[in-house]
Image (cartoon, rainbow, N blue to C red):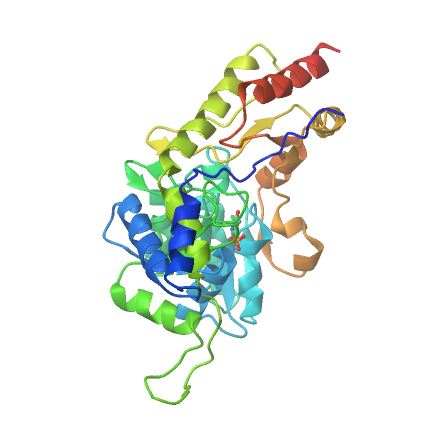
Length: 374
Ligand SMILES: *Cc1c(COP(=O)(O)O)cnc(C)c1O
């Protein structure tokens, strides 16, 4: 059996262990410390905007805190892009609220501004104005930031920007992760940078960051004893994990460069195959190409290709199955136009790691060429 080629595997810089060693040497083995503060500063500097970053245990916990901070509670409704990973939607249910799913548009595969407005109007007519909108930059491609913001402003609904897959992407020169009323990042094992597991909340003000960290550290009131007037969470990032993050931030730009070059290589390699198409960047959009995705002409071709790659020990995966198709969310309202269903049927994510070697990329390309030659 040939060695496995993964979809998206961790890629260390070599600098991580020195930050971890420092944490051990100084006994900062706790969910706070110099690496946590340093990692937050590194991220803040990278995002390059007047924002504040709180390092947390995961992207999912960051989303949960966003909802709590926006006052989402039992019986509320929250709009969520249907085409996404389940972690975008699950925290809505943690709060006892109902997700309302909105379909995608073709240009970015992200939340469709027209469907979004239809959904908001209909929910208001039915008696409940949605409390928030969760928009996602899927696979690193920015969503239609201006159009979505326009709808949100019209109805005065805050945006939670799920930037879990889009560190290093930008939209008209502004970095993804800075567009939401609140935003989140993820550093899970398969993301652009990883801390093994981890995430962050991005806020507009220092007060909001303080509130997030207060909630993430068990909501302890200012008192010598343990005093609580809020429900708290154990969502802070560990200082060890943050050390990995600091090492990763030294090479984040080269990770983006490598992932973009994988995408460009695939695009060039398959340009003469009619049955393969790619999502192109609209003017002003810059995707980190977290995952390189292709569209095939049918579900059968997609599944045939996936199995052919699997035989070669190459991991690939259909695009995210939309949340409105997930059994667990079958009771949730959804506003659909067919786009995310179609993308799910015909789309495939190819190996996309920033650490893929030339010979691994050759193996992927040869296997796909062979499949289309047969
Ligand atoms: C990975 C991911 C998350 C969750 O982040 P974790 O750090 O794994 O909790 C949320 N949303 C999207 C779109 C993701 O891809």
